[in-house]
Image 1 (cartoon, rainbow over the protein chains, first blue to last red):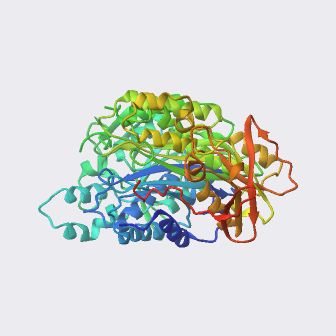
Image 2: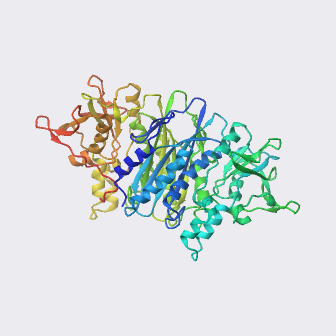
Length: 319
Length: 319
């Protein structure tokens, strides 16, 4: 059984207490108070992490659930080139949940928050009638008018992704195989991509500072889905070059194209822009280009282009 | 069955599309982008509305659930004297929920948002395995350094509340009585206090502009609980005068003292401050004073003061 609500809040408040130049008041009043620096715009994102939909307690250690919960929000801030500053956590817990699980969740959450200088500034707690429900809100800053939108891609732009794709989906696929021991599935060296994905905050800020990206999105729903978002919002099409797509070790091409939760960045840049092969310690790969012609295509280096269908996962579809 | 996630987002996006001077980008990118006006601080609050914990679908019409969901956040902004500007809604829906319910929820939500010039600027949607889960985040502005905190009450300050108390708890009490027909219970004229509470945003801004309040909180958990918060954060005690407490029609003194969800304001002011008996169309009543001596007391006009215990509702306690 978790501690009473007031004690949980007290414990979180102590754990979250941090110096912050932007945060005037954190947990302990009706609202948190933030003081945005002059010339900065505010970025806001919210993301659910619901047991059964986004994670399973028998698969995901508490630290992983806390980490992934915050990573989703940080990755959205990264997708705009922003600097994350504060997080708000709403947490509904079943009454039979051990407090040690809550502690593990908070450990995973706060460790990632610390690494990204993000203060836990507030939230809500409640009782849940079924499973752990978390909702994360992350606030970030970006210089006025400089946030990298989905809508900025132009025909002729080059498509890039960070890191390798499909790794998270490959781990998830293994988790669905009941004949493999749960601990063994979790302990494989490449499992970190799924359990502790690292949002690409530093890469995104590098791109924003140097005005290198024309459009950007984070790969949370899968390459085909997220590329479609950029195409829709920019009013363009795109062509991927199959052999250029960085498929994660142990993943298939299909997982790299359609698997979600890699939390890498997909961005476009003008053909003349000099994009390094490595930014902030992570690899960057050219994977295709932006077309005036709507729709998405995939081609081999020499073969004819085929239509690329959106096959990301929608939560409302049963798996 | 609700519409697929993408269609729900599209529908909400259309309904929420509004001109706003502060909102640069709303729904449709990885983050919403807000441009805070110079000299303003940012207020942030989050609140769960979970089926079974905060509402019941057999008791609360969809419009009421949407209204109450947003009202909780607006009331927190009011509690600091802030001006609400944007809301973010995370909504997890059971697959067997009729779309008409979602439409009703959004109607109630957006009608209240409109009245308070609050833009629905983003959020998240997901599938829920049990019941409707909503999490609301509201952003507001307050002039730099001027937000009214819980911590500002000083001995000798006078205690005030807006409106009448206990009305929401009285309705809830009736809802728990199975022998009364559900529609009849809902239709009573005083039921609005529970189903469609009106957050006191205008009153709060009046107090902030004129620097009248030294501390403030909204009455979401009940007078005894919320007064205790002011006392704790301010390092003071308080005495209530029983016959001065404005008990809502149909409510008991106990409901006025301990019942939650009235969303009225409790504030303190210096004895010399001129507090009108009516602000922005709502009544304001003096109900006691702030003491240097810790703890809370309640007294008749002439009788001896008795200790006042905190009896608000904690969600983790079974009801």
